[in-house]
Length: 146
Length: 420
Image (cartoon, rainbow over all chains, first blue to last red; front, side, top):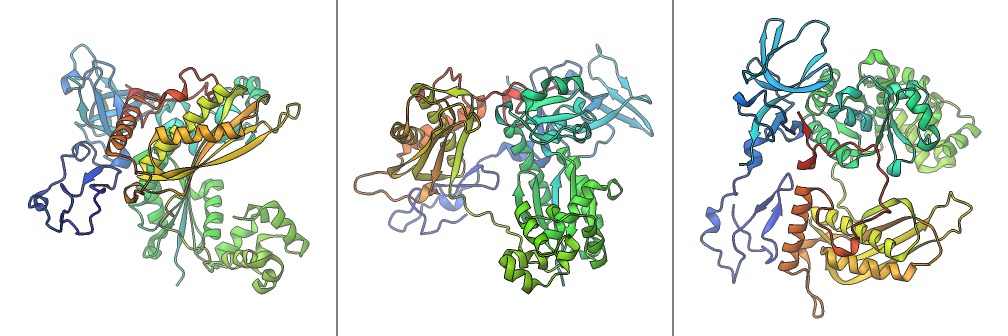
């Protein structure tokens, strides 16, 4: 990222595509000599890049139960949910069963769907006929405050 | 070659937003109330089928609604605004030519997709539904006015499964034959009355009218309408939203406000909110207007409405400076003895905050002020709006909006996430 000589002294920041502030330059121009560090300036780490694949389709939900502790989802964690991903067997999903939300491991063999808990204290849910079931989104990350 | 234009319109948008996070509302009649829980401003299809009208006052229908199992929601614009942005972002992956027309409608230019319009529209519809949970209808035609017509049919006619293409003249004529003049985009009752007076009583007749003749009686707007109905595009897609020149923060009160101290709290709150909105776009202003008004529908009350502008010596984005200016303007228009229903703060002549010049007598916002405002905004984003306020805005605020049935801000506040 190069620095234009018209750089105004106030503007060291510009809004990025998602309104995230990205520094344009580390220093302003004084008497026309740019800082030698400016050419080496990278963007700071942006955690959105790591967690949000598709901003329009990514939602956050708070984990309440303990049925998925084996998958690293503990009560109080924030689960990152991507609706744009099509679920494949083995994904952790946020599912709807008869209108109720639940997070489970999605297991599918042919037409048989099972929602597996990852805690021996909880039993799996087998999706039987007459149950309205849908995958609301695929859980991609878990964020935990230590 | 005529360029296809799509109008994408979210179905029952506010009710659909509520359903994304409360799936138990699916299939049930849902209505959303206006600010202050006044009247019905959005209905699910089930609520429409029950004969609930737009604008039906909530306090008169409370029992009727609960008897019919209607689920009532206060409007949650924080949620609707975020869901709208998601829908619009999704649409951008289907065409770079996008005009956001309202919170739940957008025009898309589909040049280059002429040979697969229907497929493209069906994929678009399925994608928006999957990514955001919001169902949309798509109408495609050579002009915006006809795209509106196509969208209407896409929505009304269940056989179209949410997509209707009206690129051929014969299809356009068949579609127009099903409509009234007042169904057309931009035709209000007055215009349709004037058309009927001239013997033009149906949309089809208007399409076949002589544009020159219509121009003589109805001016250029009338002529443009005729040409648009014929498939000649006259209203272009406006891709770049004009840089915002002004913004407003205003609400009706939960109950009438009668004391200056309460009004000062309200005006300080609205000025703070407007300042926050402005900072989000990196703008600043030196001009604002404060207005207050009584309730014109309470004819038994004495009526008063007034507005007052205020100028600052230099454009600022500092909440403290703006609140002080707004409160100064309020003092000039405040009159005792009225029952105020509404107040607001408008910020005008917005300019980029980083391009401000200082003057001999006034300095732009100092780095310390900018840092303070950034901290204020960060804290309010993290802990929810109103977590940190300036003292003048008051903490009790009995005048605040009534929102008894409001859902959570699932997508914009860490403390209000959906819990699973």
